[in-house]
Length: 149
Image (tube, rainbow, N blue to C red; front, side, top):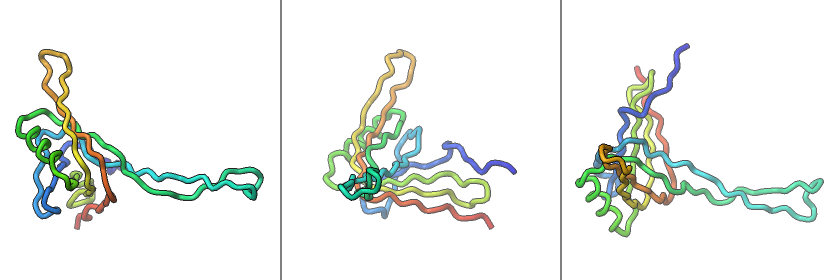
């Protein structure tokens, strides 16, 4: 049986500032933007806890801060500075390329507040890089890609 894994090349990372009506690519993106959701667990151990074992309940969930690596362009930096200046969160969508057996790839959507960072490697011949740190807010959704017919 052959693997159904895919590589990141061919994915799209986009953002929307109008509630998801129109989407624009993040220029020169070099990585996919997919947050990891973590759950807090609250300690509720008490004097009656069985055999002295700690007990927990689920608490709040958070997708944290993610970083999207990009190549620096003035248009991309300008886009991110404008997004950072808004008070409302920006919506993000990452669409993976279709895996074997799919006609369209999986889609991840979330909202967040971006902070662009220009990064120089210190190597005179290396390209100037940029990363976008995104403080997520709210839920992360996943839509499975369409199966090929």
